[in-house]
Length: 314
View 1 (cartoon, rainbow, N blue to C red):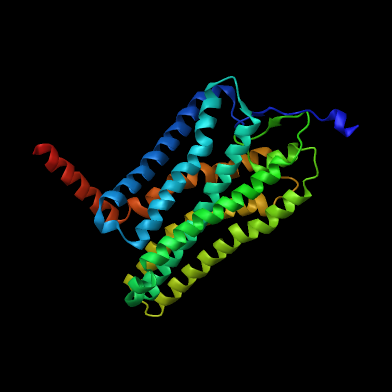
View 2 (view 1 turned 45 degrees about the vertical axis):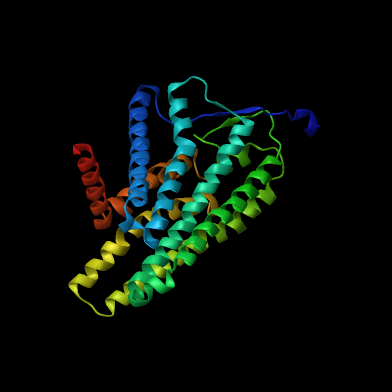
């Protein structure tokens, strides 16, 4: 009987955001501006790090990869959201949905691992300044980046393959603006216990452990600086840890609350807002918090602009 009720789903319908029709145009402009800011901010960081030799250091190697990850992470969901807000057709093919799920997981995981690498880099730089270059060798930094890219491939592929084995019945409406794991599991008419178990186990490895490592590294940084208390030292603590931890908390907090600690009364609106925080807001804020306030980045921007100006004049 169950087999007769099952149909082959060739596409899904994305309901998008719970925005009244009269406000649709205003929110479209807002999200378009946020997406363009994300793309422009992260592209500037990547270009400056590539062009300026002063930024060819471990910290900026991680930062360039983080900016690329942010750019791609936002691009996985935002263009489709913007298209659906302007179109009457909000459908996405079954294959397109799984592809979106894969790349969404891939770049979310990559961001998680890169944030850990950046936190470790700051820990070594502040706690072991005399041994920084020997510890953060080129070999170690490249290995950390490559390891991040490889591990995320396996994790994203695992969840995508597990999702592909599920059956979907007549209901193909996803109450979300992209193909996320939770709404897809709710639509499935198969047994999803294996998927949920893997989410919980792998989530602990990919989300909780990196988050705890970042917290521990910054706690060590704070302890190290406060051993010799001074106004300059306290300022260094807040400038080094404060803004970074705020974004880290926003990114990990929403993901942990959404996937690892779901509640039965989680509304669709609440889940959508939480998803917006780490898929749209965090990638947009990262360039400002991690780099555009940074003296090295400002210096690199000035040098690149001066070179371009001199070349134009000649």
